[in-house]
Image (cartoon, rainbow, N blue to C red):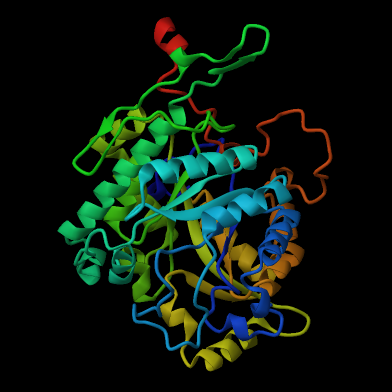
Length: 443
């Protein structure tokens, strides 16, 4: 490994996930005959996408979400030529969970304007419904439309260009501090019930050991929450928290509170932010340097967090027998009247499955712990990922064939009940509990 990347955990797997958004990541993808745009808001459409991803052997899927209707890459309202509207990501994941059995489910849930107690208990419920496959893509919301929709506080004025070049910004700092408080509240609430707080002893009439349910008594400048959670401790205990970062301040948030940070290397677009034009090795070195900061290292240790997993985003269009991927990209760009690669925050690769595998292998060698694939079109490119790309990655030992195991059956006996936990996929280890009374007594 190059010395620029720093150390890497030898027991960390290379995870491969997929990011689902509408009919795909290209703004004109809904105009593809195979897009099923007429059923975009049908629950079964999303179940079918999840089933495709699970059958392919992918480790997890993420579901995009925002607090306001979509805007164009420049931040303006769309002219109606692109998909508008979304289903709520967390509720959608609740629907998908009992209809799948192995794949991790990571909805995007925004901390800005939302109540952290409701966010935490909703995600905890998803972890129960999915039997331990839930995660949380934490997002902040700085746009005026979202603020106006809630009407509780104005949107901060953030100089995005200045932030991308490393300049401090008070508005962004406030949003990130709010997000950090929300993540801390969630982690405390997830710990507020000990593992065996529920006794359920019909003979004695005791359902609960109240001494093992704890108030969290969190207070900050933004809110105070007594707790405990209304939801018993979920299968994973602590859900993996994921943050997509395009700037050093957001990467610092990830280093303080998250288990996984997603970055966008090798993109020439201004939307890549601080990572614009930077290589995987450079970004990994930057993230590891942030992680080693004494204050951040102490915060991670207090929260029981291990080495931050670094995942790279890649927009992917793959060749098919009917059409080369490059021609598909050109055709969709013509429909959108704009080149998608110029506005995509993540690198766009249009080519063969072998080319994609080579790039992913190179990124892995440069120090990342996984990739999140963004299909250019859905469901077509997701099908090709499963049929053409994943087998190559398994054959080369890049993907863990045992993780999603399309060869296995959901009905197979599962000797380890944590085998399909999302924490297991990321090799995060068993989550401790800060309120565990027996741990305190032993100490």
